[in-house]
Image 1 (cartoon, rainbow, N blue to C red):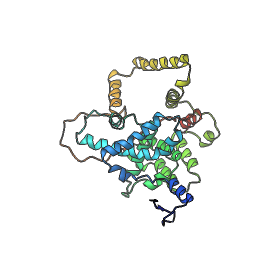
Image 2 (cartoon, rainbow, N blue to C red; image 1 turned 90 degrees about the horizontal axis):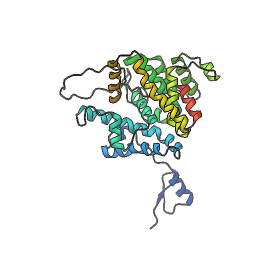
Image 3 (cartoon, rainbow, N blue to C red; image 1 turned 30 degrees about the horizontal axis):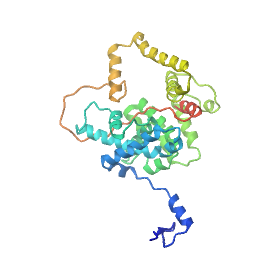
Image 4 (spheres, rainbow, N blue to C red; image 1 turned 90 degrees about the vertical axis):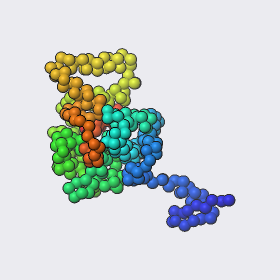
Length: 319
């Protein structure tokens, strides 16, 4: 029995031609929206969450596939975060379970940094409402934006959250970034680069011309992280061992920094819990379970690129 195939125009052909068959095979399957992902049974959600883990494990062979799927995978991670918070509030999982641990237990591996970073942007813009009770950014706009645009916007939002705290949504930089994402596509990159340069106190003209910028502790740390993650495996043993020993010395140097041990212990506890190191967490008695409050804005680390040295350098300059 010959299966009937639907033509591009929507009609059913009893004897599809080779061209019709090829078009049907080439038609991509549409990705489900976040609302559909968020309602999936946990087993199905965890199965989707394992996809970026597998892609990240074979990043060298599947770099383009990973980039193509990153926006969708970020929605899956955003849904995982909501599921994690709900289970935490319902006391279905241990209170000291971090999201990283929850994800690894259910997805079979660690969440790739750039996917988790983009999930933070999705939570902050698409799943957060403005004063008009509408999302700051529609899911359709998010889906239609270039991946590079979203990562630049993510750096802008993260910086605004660090500076403005709970008032980050009224930040001029955030509003300009949203306007750039929703406006004409011609000058999106230039606009976002200018906003980020302004946040860092740099001259957009100097940055575009390739002039050297001031080396800060943050940029030095980003460079080291990028090198360790992407290039250390290709270094000689002497080079890698020297860098490793230097990192150990960095940790030991805190003993002579003059920073109190109590403060460093607090930072360690917060890092273990997956929250900002400087956050003050007060212990309170257990209370009856209440409806979950709206999630706080996420500040995600700008994960160094896992592609090439050139892209690593560009990512550090954009941060």
